[in-house]
Length: 109
Length: 113
Image 1 (cartoon, rainbow over the protein chains, first blue to last red):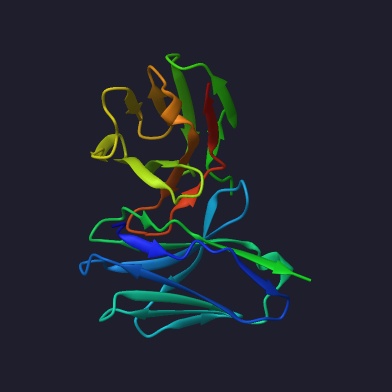
Image 2: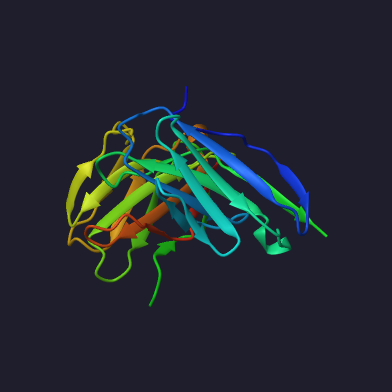
């Protein structure tokens, strides 16, 4: 079993839709959590950190449930430019990033 | 501010040949990482450097892979000899001291024939 699991998708949604991605992690000692975005044939880039209290950045909201070892990302009012792969990432007590396989999002007009 | 620089961007070689990748991290970033990303997968860490010291190389296949960061700045990753299964994108990343955010370079796409 992979340490970080994500639904690979693809999620095909129309512009303006709300879409949610989920991620589970197996190591209860995981300490820090992130969502990275990776465009096709490009490098991953940090989208946002994920905190227990939840955090919001514009149309993006990330939530963490430590008890269930579950992380989510909600995108509201989807734009064509949101089309990408979204990577769920956890760390332990070092800065070693452990990536999920990614969830591919395709927003269509 | 310049980002992480990698070269070459693409490399095609025949199996059993050697290959080397080069990375120049963001200026002032002490921590440097090499990742491998297979198609449809997330990146997987190969090796992490703190300055010139390799502090985590547990995932590096040491029979054929080697890496160095001699002066604590640039780094090279070498494969000798390459195998078909080594075809992947090799990503270099760097981060500042005490910071989790890692900045990735554009990667080197390796194809082994």
